[in-house]
Length: 142
Image (cartoon, rainbow, N blue to C red; front, side, top):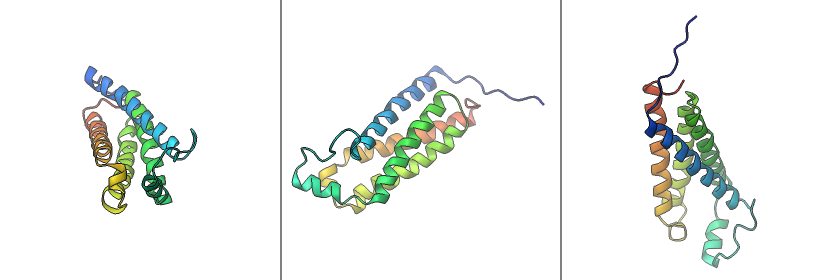
């Protein structure tokens, strides 16, 4: 049985895939930092910021974990040109939209967290999911 090989992606795709790995590795470090892997995540916070951080429900922390970990795995999948990268990055997008939606609309802590990071993270996740679907449709993922 003959198998079809994926067509080679353009150079800009390979650059974008590696940038996605770096971006998502930073996200994983931010997640690990937020759960105390690198010391007390609340050190140096004001009382208001500490109260906001303590009010984060476990399911939102779970969405943060899923969004960042699947984002990194999916980005590595892009670098390796694997079809499954698109599905994994869509899972990441959904998890991160849950997280950022909670921060913006439900947490009441927008003053502590600010709007720039939720917008940037959401936009980045949308773009990566789009890139993966686009790459799959163009045969760049095999």
